[in-house]
Amino acid sequence: MRSRRWSAVAAGLGLVLLASACGDGGGDGGSGGQIEVFSWWTGGGEEAGLNALIERYEEENEGVEFVNAAVAGGSGTNAQAVLEGRLQSQDPPDSFQGHAGAELQDYIEAGYLQPLDEFFDEQGLGAAYPDQLVEQISYEGSVYSVPVNIHRSNVMWFSPSVLEEAGVDGPPETLDELLEALEAVESETDAIPMVVGAQWTVDHLLESVLLGSLGTDAYNALWEPGASWDTPEVAGALETFDTILSYTQEESAAEDWQEASRRVSDGEAAFNIMGDWAAGYFDEVGALPGEDYDWAASPGTDGTYMWLSDSFTLPVGAPNEENTYSWLELVASKEGQDLFNPLKGSIPARSDADPARYADNPYLDSALAEWQAGPELAGSFWHGVTVGNRWKNDIDTAVGLYLGNGDLDALNEALHEAAQTE
Ligand code: GAL
Image (cartoon, rainbow, N blue to C red; front, side, top):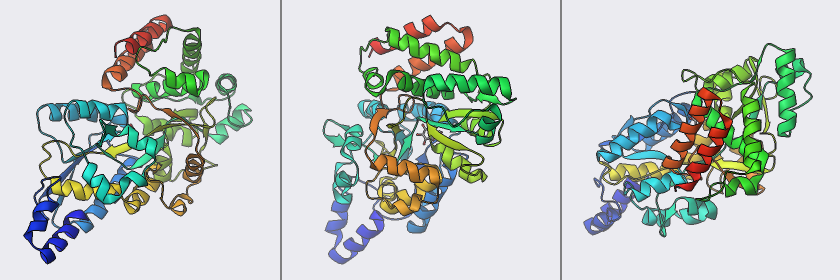
């Protein structure tokens, strides 16, 4: 790890080098102390991935106390609010998880993050990550975070046994086929046709329906500031969304995404549209691919990877910078990514990861192959790629109102408004 390697160099060459070693990050210049890492990975698969990294960090950084400051709540709904409060009151953790893309830009523009250019150069990271990903973590020519993975948002998980009972012959490929399948499940079985969890899982569903209905280019164009959502195409997509929601149970803050995934693998529900962190959950609970659950691209989105990426940062004023650099080094490394991602249900952000590490999990095996083949790309809005927090929260508020009053026109109008005020 960086701190140890550099102290060894300094021991050989003198203290001048130790001083320059601390040059780009300050730091406490030695081992020991603490590191506080902030995320929302507290359960089902996500925690297992984080714990594997923590264990490795502790092995490699003896004497550093690891403080896992994870705040529960899928997709960071609670964690992001806690984090914002801490950043505003200048009480940052040593590193926090943020999504590559517009969400990260918000943190950078607020002045919360330190640039990591020197670190990237030393670690050769510019070449290790795809260029498009580096763009998403850059601002005015500097890089600001260290991506650990690529997740896919547009995955439809389904229960093979419920589909069979409903007489549905294989996963629906289009949104029209999905609606037919939902109807068949409703009339032929006792299962929930499309399961949702807390409200954010409805936002998550919305992005896949928009992508499936509009197509990749038109979906991507929605996120240009000032884009028109006041179109027959968006209205049509929202009608489909509304119909799909009529086949869900009521969303509930008490049920997060793990519970929705569980209902699929236990055969209580037919379908769930959720990111591939669900693959980590299924593994952890021992659900079997092809038997207890199966997957396909969410209807209408085959060939497109709606991506998002978890990345770690060095906040301004982080109390233990040198320990943070050691953490970022682990997170950036091939070894760290190949340790974390098979448990997390994601594929590595680095381009040189070892495919054999993913081959045991049929989902991850196929996801990695698809990613490496160069799919079309769409950015997840809910998970921070295409929009920052203001726009995202406006959409969430509009979705919440619509869930209460069912007013689809008002939803469309609010979504249009949200796009105008960037
Ligand atoms: C996403 C995050 C994933 C996963 C998911 C569910 O926003 O990028 O790593 O944690 O939320 O909690």
